[in-house]
Amino acid sequence: MPRSALIVDDSRLIRAIVRNMLEPLGFDVSEAASGREALLQCDAKSPALIVLDWWMEDMNGPEVATAIRARKDAPQPRILLCSTETRLREIRRAMRAGADSYLLKPFDKDKMAHRLQRFGFL
Image (tube, rainbow, N blue to C red; front, side, top):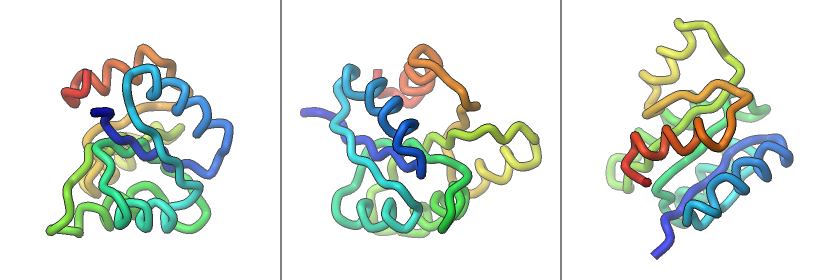
């Protein structure tokens, strides 16, 4: 059975790039263009993995991660926060918000595969 992944990014191009990395690895991929849309999709079906952008218009990545982690009765996905944010203080904030790992943009399929391997998906 394919594992499910939700890509959350306000950039259609980034969503397509990440989709092209995940689908060949056996993931059933859904997309959301905003934090609120991501939370609605998590209500509808619980993804095993969320690849989450930091900077979006309605909610930022740490806010989305916090909202997902606050759902105590829902399955808890692995959250991979992706951003150009390099300040250690901000990366720590994202991890405290509930991200399981952080990936600096731009990234490639090898870096993505390394994180997925650390999560136990590969």
